[in-house]
Length: 414
Image (cartoon, rainbow, N blue to C red; front, top):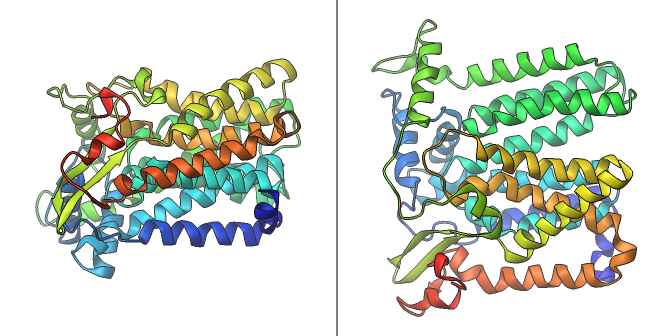
């Protein structure tokens, strides 16, 4: 295993290799099935309407994610490739962003490669990178924002300011894709104050008031800019005076009470993969096919152990790296206990699941001497599970209607 990781001893070649591998994996048989899958039935028609500037459609969510789906359709046509092309880029950006975050935290290419590799092996990232939904774009912008803000911690004052500003803009774009990214604005503001207090040399040239100002202005302007197409609708165009009322209408739709759904689940069940979702399971393109959204059990369950280890390590030593790794997951997950949604779904856990790879990489790096070769055995197990589940993550051809039984380990997975 150490020989296999030897080519990843330098950050830039390692990152490029992982990005190429991720993009190739996400694009392989991307157009299967040749029909709309799961929530594509909402977002692809909304993207069509946005391209035509017809008028407000799917107004419970901001515009950016649907605009990006539309951009893929402009490039490749109104077909499965066009619908999903931009999602593959978002998935690759997530892998690269995790690599950058872990490298900035540890300054070790091996740790960064492990974090990115586990992200790539996380089933949820693969599935969301191959479907025209909003969550992949939101997660990509958020992960890149965290990387940019971490990058801003060191450098000249000018470098620190523009890198922090870049992170703020990326967070604004994340919110402009889906409001689930809003809590990260608060986390960035609070995290800056706490970490700056612990070490004043972090973010040189920035104080709390200037950092908060850049965060608010950068994110606010980026978010507002995502609504630009709405001002040119043929029907019910947005106006400056109507901008705030439109946000209130979006909030009302986000918090409305919805009818019960087959795949609804409680937020506290997501970390243990309590109710994954079949995005697709039917005959298509000449074969029985399925797309199953669940997390890699090795990453999902092993990640919880890593979060606990990182949190305990911070309590004992006050070391920033494990504390930050644990806080990413805790903050990303715990907020779902208070978000006013009448129904919960497993894919809401997508962004917190990504942070598990960061916690795992940091924990493996921090305690690699104590782990001896167990960390390598764990990585092999995660890879083997990826290979085993791959057919039902990517709409592979299955033997027949009952094939799902092979992969549904528990009753709630059916």
